[in-house]
Length: 117
Image (cartoon, one colour):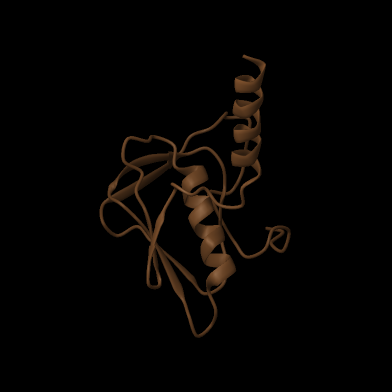
């Protein structure tokens, strides 16, 4: 039983420290697809896709992050970086839903800390 518990704990630690969520998105050429099917909150999956774009986009190789149609909640800020397009054109509605005492931008462009607005 202890070995099973230790294995589960190690798997959870690995998932928590992974740079990208392996199931959050798929990549096809220069487009990253986020499929939020069955989810209400896509903050983590969408930020994982945006981090992938940050790490792989260049001025010669721009990346589009495209979200599948649906109504989704965000419980944290999205970070979008250079050479990345966020495509929400296929009937996507994002609603910021978090504790009313917690005020934060819905989308932040650029590196953390560079915007002081």
